[in-house]
Image (cartoon, one colour):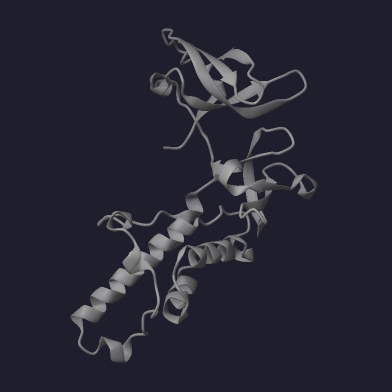
Length: 230
């Protein structure tokens, strides 16, 4: 993927704007080589290109004959119009995209499921982007089109027993709702917390949650809660 982006940086003669970065991100995300891997975000592609361009500019400035040997930079780009605050701080690195994991909310029941792979994408007449996902543990017959902005996010993280103190009333969590005929993860807000002394079994605190999808309330243990990635 890095080699392809290097080639795009050298060969592209189109404006390097948001549309360009989104197109590149979609191309990589839907490629066969990334089957089963998380979707590539356009902002991460933008960050990579910006870093590489700055490197290229530095090389040109430090070498009088660089223009005779190096591939020319794109003549038209929008980096100079980008606000200073959007540049990557010195010392930061682009995250390893292969390590990202995602979950998506099913339009059928409103529950969140781990994403196995992103199969395709489309842009609706409204301008909204959708991706077709395959959920972990489900077959092709359960594939769904979901809204990228509202129904796809980084995978929620289970809480350790020692982390219960991080939770506060009002926090949004992803809670494992157990029913007689099904068990699924839904978004919920913490309404009340009963702090209890931990024992050999771990956290014994009780959390009263209100599920966002049906406004029902339930007291649960920490083991059923997941927090949103920072």
